[in-house]
Image (cartoon, rainbow, N blue to C red; front, top):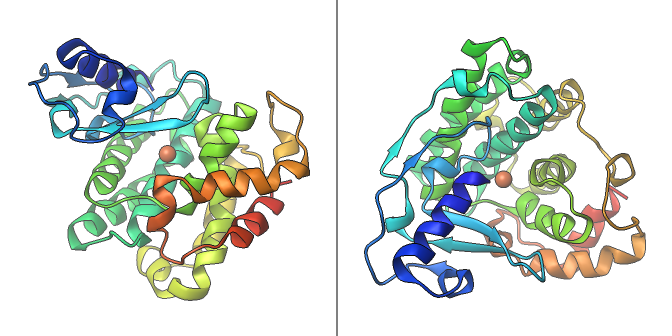
Length: 274
Ligand SMILES: [Fe+2]
């Protein structure tokens, strides 16, 4: 996002070198500039985080470059700035925020503090997702902005899981928008996890099955269930699955999924969207 770019620029401007030098945590040795984060979509939560996610130019691999000094000193959440955000972008970024809330709530780095952020985020995002698709509903978009921010704080205090681990190779391989890739994988990852941590999902959403709710929200947002429904850069070929599975297992977020995955688990997850 533009906010990740701003953090990236801050690294290079104050500490020099190239983006790869900051891949990891706390690699910047010199002070960084104070900055203000103002989101204009309703989803990434980047405004709450000390990590900049930057794609490596030649490989399209997402480099997570994190430093407390890179975090925005001030955040402004103003729904009037989302007035021109189109419905489809609201749907895509909104479902990404929902994935942040859900994945952070159950990940192995979850803790009482992060779970408060996650569950409050989920409540806001779940309630306001549908009305916030409409441009003129500034009230709902404001609630989504706050929900996405809280979900970002939840990640900052914990981590993500396999839906994000599986999404990144899809973005690298097919040029899929991050939120679309996450939306494709999220229901399948929850279904995989539910066998071991069902009670955690019912804590966050006691009303009914969280998978059904997310599938319903995806339908409202007109989000795809299969890769074939998406506009992709390269042709979709199920022979790609083993490579995607290996790449997903290498993702940083993969190790924090509450139910550990083997390569064959990633293969099964990917098969669901081909
Ligand atoms: Fe995300």
